[in-house]
Length: 319
Picture (cartoon, rainbow, N blue to C red):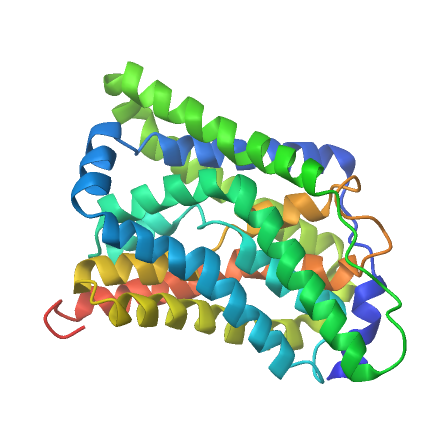
């Protein structure tokens, strides 16, 4: 497995500059659409009356998941490459994914909690995503070289300021604009909210599918192993959310939403950041990182919908 994946790190994904610009715009529209569902009044009420749920959700997503992902990369070190490990850490450092609110509603979870966590996590990601990736990614590289023996040949050199700016532009600004629009024009918001959310997610999926299609030969070579790795990682993310929420005594409806918020990651953000040479230079093993982020973008929708179907069929009193 390791030998087959080694060549993946040095591969460069074929994706045009125009396509990347369109992907950036799509991600911004997705976040704008998510923000249209946020009501400041409900958000304020939830945060003031039930802050524990918010804090547990953030703990699960930004502290527990990156830490557990790091441990998973250590466990799998003999089977995965450096690029794949860093890709897993980058995805775990991202905020919740754009369809988590929809999946929470299907799972009969707390949609208000899901939306509130999405908003706070997205704004928090401006600082926490660069920090978590730099910290845990740097730690992995040091550990990997120490175990392999010899001197440290590579350090994790990324432009944290540029990543901060990119995350703010891609997530923060559309989120703020969407919240302001929903507050100023509530009637229009109700009409356009669902179409924007649906169309933007479909467009994003098409981008990922096109990216795979343009790199079909590479995709066929490595997809079986990437699928196994992403499946394990995504299962860990979902289990992390469920376990942390259970440990802190969160009620079942809210626990479902925290589980989904932790297991549905914004891999689109990770992918867009990886295509930015000002953040991630060619000296890093970008091939493995990009493949992990891209396949996460497809798999977490499948697993999220599957989990929501299970939750919807199980009464809250049982699970």
